[in-house]
Length: 436
Image (cartoon, rainbow, N blue to C red; front, side, top):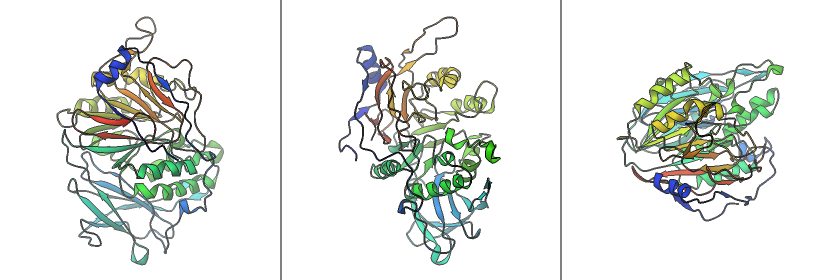
């Protein structure tokens, strides 16, 4: 269901800026990737298979567990009883030299009661090493593996997958399976995981469980770097559920303390030659708020001699020429855009809009309510803004773009897919010209 060829775009400031200066028009693709109906896969489908055995671990996923990539957080669920919250691991298959102890929790949502959710920090790992790990006991135990990143180095090469707004439809499955063939080493996830909030009552929790089993085929073997979207808020007062992000925070931990963040919803990591900052579009971010103060300090820590690539993840795009969610990112843009330019952020990835769009390097920092430039202008120090919100969820594609296409928009297409970001060295990385 995917095109077999990909055009590679070398992301360098002078090249992207030259498109603007030379008057190259942006492209609105009319291609529509073959798709299935935008409905969730039936919950008894093999895509959500429950592993065999009493109390067998399921919904296994890992994320980075520290600032520099020498730790992982391994998470899983057991349904029959708490069991043992322990990870056995080592560098040889079927030979587990080390053990790490984790914690167990659970929660309720309406009358749904979750399984026993385990989180285990495995730290003190070596860079650029393949580790095998085992969770569970007896015949119900399960074995997986992961690869740690190279040590922090300005010329370390690395390939990230970019996925947003995934959901659990047949289109979602196509996206995930296609990504798993891409050679991506870590997923940068742009929010909106399960779309369980489109269900009611006990079905909300059940659809979190099915999504965890669905994503396990990739997330158990490589880190997924999480960010939260609007579908993780789950504000449902008619069910008596009014605590934002309740399910998400119980199930998907982040290494926020390693970057001195006060919330799992915003944090930073370094991986290979990249410094990655995750922001929360749905948490307070204006002046004096915790997220604002944290970002102000985190940007000062970026060392381009060690991590020359500075990447920001968020859910709501700051620049978006689609009719869907138009200008929803304007408030965050007004607060943070000048910082992103001052610190020369290379690329900002967002989801939310169920389409792909890539900008030129532009800025609108001179505009205010009484004077200044009223439209985005070329700026060689500005990030490239890329929306990848087309993972495949049940809400379908956002096919209505603004007409005419704004000058700042380089390419846009409403098709299901994902992206990859392949860092070559300290000066060069590559992206697909269009969604994969």
